[in-house]
Image 1 (cartoon, rainbow, N blue to C red):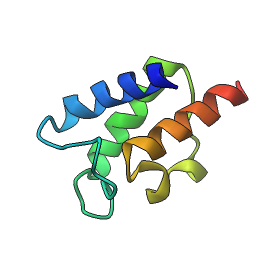
Image 2 (cartoon, rainbow, N blue to C red):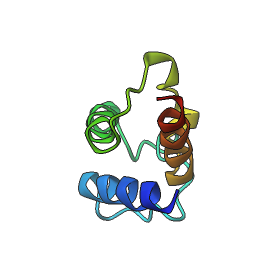
Image 3 (cartoon, helix red, strand yellow):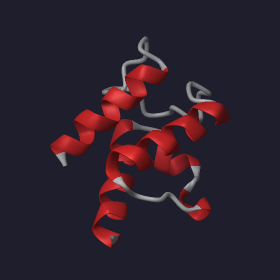
Length: 80
């Protein structure tokens, strides 16, 4: 899980380097990440982890924090 966390953090920091992703718990709710950021994030996650995020998984709860995103990636990795 630590490898996933480091990679996801790196992807997020490329999107918005000024955000403290270790503490932020409302990336979507506080509009830190917008729809374009989410599309970019999903694409980067797909490339980095070879997982597909289906439309039903694209909900704020899965993208509001670094932990939530890592959990999603972990679950998708285990499905494949």
